[in-house]
Length: 471
Ligand code: SF4
Image 1: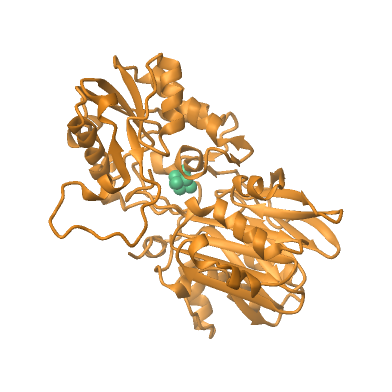
Image 2: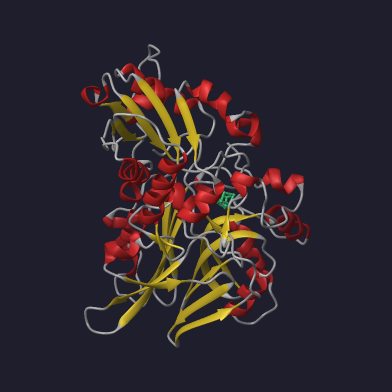
């Protein structure tokens, strides 16, 4: 379930060389909607002008046929956002588009630049004026101020000044450039699609589920520290930064990405099912049914059921159509927020001992509401199983996690958490099992929210706080 604890981050998409670039970007963003629901935007290039539209709301709500008609050209980039830096107003929605001495450019970003405040202070000292509070705008200023003559060279220079996590898509009048930070925290996949009149074009997306919808084929990932330029001259791949130790965000596999995506070259569904299998081995339970917290707990629950031999049941049903405009009852209704999203199937739960599988416990309050809901539907016992280790540290690489003070596992033992969420038993997956489930033999993933061991220097406490979302 998308819940109050972790928020979605962002999704990016880019396409070059297709006559319906904006329409396909719209579809790509539609497939990436789960990565951010606050704002959506597309910028397109007709070879002379960059046309840009962005608005607060879901992709299908705000990007209408009339909007798409105003986005001509064969190249486009798109963004769907949940804020991880900067506030949530429209001026922070992406893509950002500017005219500068390198021509007209637009950019969209997934991640979090950990030295953005430091860079911004320097730029402001030198006269730059910022319109938004998002870290992404810093990149455009760095590009605009570069003395390099070409956009690609200016971009290279700008990217080398950034720290933290970024998967970026740029649009210029005559090219698309995409880049990934040297650690590769956030995913960025590259694909190809056939043109109806013959020939091929290139597409890029945060997740491969965007390619499936538009009929593109996944080729490979943009490598950490790599920049890919697609222009009339064709496709060029180059390293802009020396190789660093990879730090792929393991949480993409635990929770964020869609299970039908291939992320960091690996099927998310395969990882999640393995998380469930290993969870069953580490924390078995004597129970009648395995019930997922939908949707994000489903694949792990399937794995748990397969490994344990306990039947899998959809004992909680999720309402997928919860909009932002519902009317709350004026009388207080207990656990209203969770009831709006989930409803128990009483006849599957009544009198049963239930293994309840979820992907994480953040503050603990939502988990407690769900445990209570299962119990109030008649469950005799609730054995809560979590398909990752306890979340003890915030993320500074683009995932909106609460502060350490708010993270229940940072301040409580597993037994204390069990009592708080009112489960009969509680089991978390171990770190070594998480590594095994994502096939991380070469230690290429980031696990900092489970270990507190960050793979990069976080610039300063002040910047670190500034990198956190302002609510
Ligand atoms: S700290 Fe956690 S959420 Fe953030 S990049 Fe690392 S694994 Fe992902």
